[in-house]
Image (cartoon, rainbow, N blue to C red):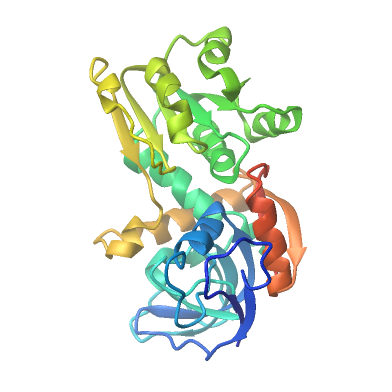
Length: 336
């Protein structure tokens, strides 16, 4: 099959940063689906793994990235239930296994669901990874109220992919007052479109949030720069509040700043369940199935804002170059 991979961790401008390769067709295991991939979303995680995994030693075989996909089931392993050939599915994949930058991919059926009906492949491809991340952050890590109890939620990085879906879920499925950060008129407009009640400027986060009428907030999700905003988050979090982040940092964080407020710091990594084969790995399939229904019903909107075409190293180099500028609103999708 055709695929795009790499051997060395190189700048995306390097000719060998991503390469067109031919690989053997993948063979599904007993719990796997074999999927003919129709489209993918390109995430910051893709670029991070490209520049980190072979920084010191080249890969011996082509390393295939891609952690969002939509496609058609070609065959099912012997232990698979709930799927059959011909189903259109969506998923975010497993960081332990070859990714979706290829014509076909094997993926464990427990972290897959059927894609939303009536949704184009490029629209569907924009959603799996960010949906899982947002859902797990809100309901598994921060454990925000899912009933009518009101609370305040600050979304740092509101116009990005995860921020866009977090805002929608919180606005539509909880009684949250959502405050999203943005610094450009176009990103502020997008945050409002996603359902934010208030938009504040992350360049002066404390002053901007308080000018909007919030001395403290009950929950904070950090999707931009953990170290840069750490002091501001510690200042803004309410007593007994919770901060959640997906952004690792080499800087040392003074977590004792949270002690007086009995506040908590929670980490979310969407790949944790599949990386460690946790007993609740199947929850990701369930979450994606719930999100598919919400998309079908028009409760949640897909967030594709730019679509490139073609499974090729040239297309994916272009996509990585855009992602690395860290200025995307919504999601960038590649339709195969």
